Image (tube, rainbow, N blue to C red; front, side, top):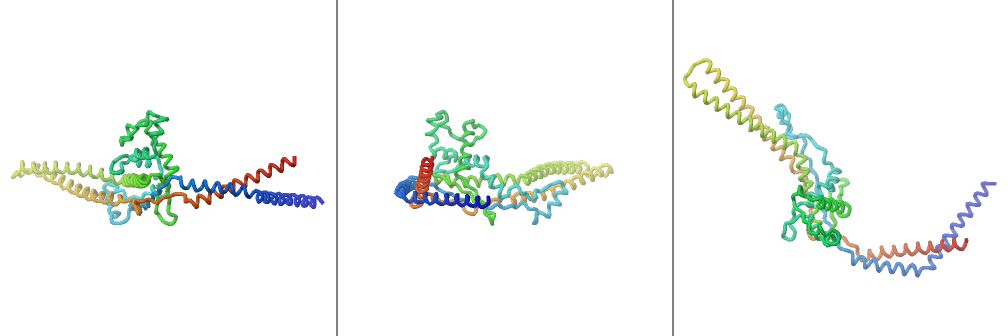
Length: 356
């Protein structure tokens, strides 16, 4: 019996909901003039917004990352031989720079700030990208009113002499650019990475993506070849040291031969054999070191071309803007939504007041 009553109560509640919805529907239709006028006003605002909205330029740069640090190929055959003499040619494979790491690296504070501090050619003049960023955004006009002490601030390449104000401005520029202007896309089925910059200044958008990729390429190459460069420097120093010892040994051997010419003493012959053996040993050592030195140079060259640019931005850049039609439709829809919500809320409040 109680189950039947519950079902009856639920049926009444459902009926009330349906009646309420029908009443709201009728209210919306009865207030169609208000909704229409509101949507019309918003549509006009949408067109005006599309006309007044600032033009945004979009720069895209595509590149792939190649890892040439594998130990295979012709160089791999010599790595074992070199290791017998205490040399590591740096042929190991590194997974430090995966696509995900490249993504984080491109938006890291270090890379973005170094890119902003790079010199670029703008309208025939060389200047730092950060100074140009400050100028076209009219930040100096804002600073003259709020912080006049830094309105004439100019960045230089000497990072060691930066003041707290310069460091703060660089940090703020990094945050704004990574949050609002920069976008990194990774290919789903390929290893292509796309760097996108959207800015109101066409030159800045193009120059920033190029500076970012250049900075990452330099950092990437420097990091990947660090072991090979260390090995090359070590082998070069060792080669110079052995060559010096070899020249001294050859000089001692020649002097001994000159001073003992025609002398048949056994002690003199033993000294001559010892000096000759020392020269021969140093010659063999020097020859092997030079061989490893050349292999190490080839290894370093083989590891350098790591980032290959596929497509770089060219003028004129793609323009990103809201069309008049799109602005009209979006704002008209927004107007209809706002007016409808107003009518519904007003109707509900009126019903509540009437019931009470």
